Length: 190
Image (cartoon, rainbow, N blue to C red; front, side, top):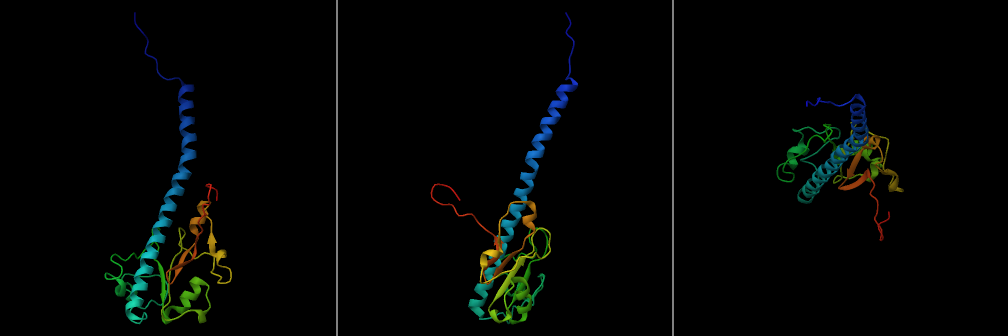
C-alpha cells in the first residue's frame, strides 16, 4: 500500500496568495500612517524641548543677544544652538524626524523670519520672542498661517497621509500651527 504524496493545488495556492494580498492592502497603509504619526509626535516633543530651553535661557539672560538666530534652518554651530546646549538643552535636535533642519528665529534679529513662520505682525514680536518650526514630512512650508483673531484656523485634523505635510510651529513655547486634538466628553463621545 503506497500512498501518493500530494502537494497543494493551484486553487489552494491562489486563495492563500489572495488572502495575503488582502491583509497586506489593509495593514500597510495603517502601518505607514502610524510611522508618520510617531514622527510627528517626536517632532512636537523636540520642539517643546527646544522651547523650554529657550524660555529658560530668556529667564536667565533677558534676551537672545548672545544666542541669536536670524531665522531659517538651524545648524549645529549657530549661536542659538551653542547658547542653549548643553546647559538648557542637553542634546539639541538639529533635524526633525523627517531629516529636515528645524526653522528657528529669535529676538530682534529674527523678527522677519518669525513673522514669516507665524504670520504675526512685526509689531507683535519682541526681543524675548522665539519661533521654532518643522515643515513636516515634505520639508516645505505649508499654507497654514496663524491668525490671532481666529487661532483655530491654524489647527488641522490628521485624517490622511497628506496631513503629515503640514507645519508644526511654536511661538514662544505655545503651539500656533499644529494638529488639533479631539476633546473626549463624558460618555466617551467626541
